[in-house]
Length: 326
Ligand SMILES: [Zn+2]
Image 1 (cartoon, helix red, strand yellow):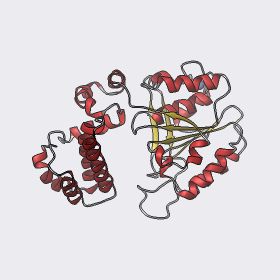
Image 2: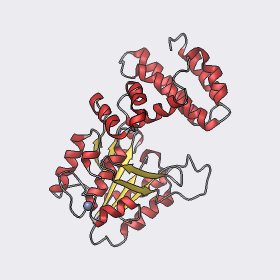
Image 3: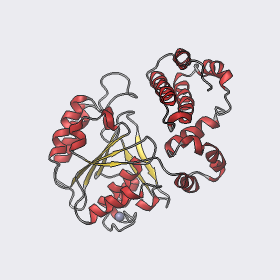
Image 4: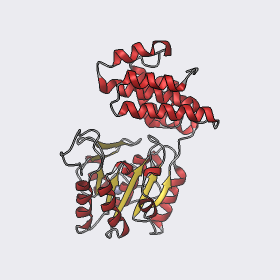
C-alpha cells in the first residue's frame, strides 16, 4: 500500500514525503481537484505511511502490524468520514495486492431525509472531535479523512474549524474536495492545500495496465479519451458502455431516456454520464460558446441528480442549447 502504487500525482507525493521526513507535515491538509483522479487513494496511502512502523521512500511497508491492521479494516488509527451512504467504505486496492479498507466509521445519524444524499453533519464532526481528543496511540497517528468536505453542513464546518485551528497531538486531518470554490475561506486558510490535476495520457494508460483486469482493457482503452484524465470517470464510462450505452445515438436519445426511466437511479446515472461525455467535448475549448454549453450541460446534470424529471431536464437543456450539433 505504498505511494508507488498510486498513478500520477508524483509532485504532491514527493512534497508530502519531504515534509514528513523533515517532521514538518502540517496537521491539516486539503486535497482538492477534479473528481475521480485519486485524491482518496493518496490520502489512504498517506494515512498508512503515517502509521507504518517501517516507512521508507516508497511509503508504508505493508507488512508491519499497523499496516496489516489497515489491510483488514480492523483498526482504530484511521477514520473515514463520508457524506453519503451508511455502508460506504473506502476500499483502496493497491497494485501489489495489499489494500486499505476503511469503513465509513463515522457515519451520519439516521435522522433527516434520504440517507444517500445526506451531507456530513454536525454529529459526525462532534464524533471526530471526541475521538481526536482521546489519548494518542502509542505507536501510531490518528488520521481523519474527511471526504466531500464542501458538502458538509454549515454547523459541521464551523465545528470542524475549531479543531483544525488547534489539532490535537499526533492527529492529522485530510480534507478532500472536488469543489474547493464552495469551501469557506477560513477552512482553506487553516489547511496546507494540495491541488490534484487530471492524469496525463501516459498515466491513464499506466492505470489501465495496472488496475484494469485483462478482459476489460480494450473497453478501457476505448473510453480513455472521453475520461479526460480521471480514472474514476473511466470506470463510470466503462460501466455505462457495458450496458450498451455508448452506442446510443442522439436521435434516439429521448426514446432511450424514456426506457431508462423505469429505474430512476440507473436513469440518473446513465444520463449524467452521457451528458458529461458530451460536456467533455467542449470543456477544454476556451471560447464563449463552449463555456455556455458546458454550463448548461452541468446544470442539467445537477438537475438530474437532484431528481428532476429526466426527460424534462433533457428537453430544457436542448431548448437552451438551441440548434446544437451534439
Ligand atoms: Zn508498515
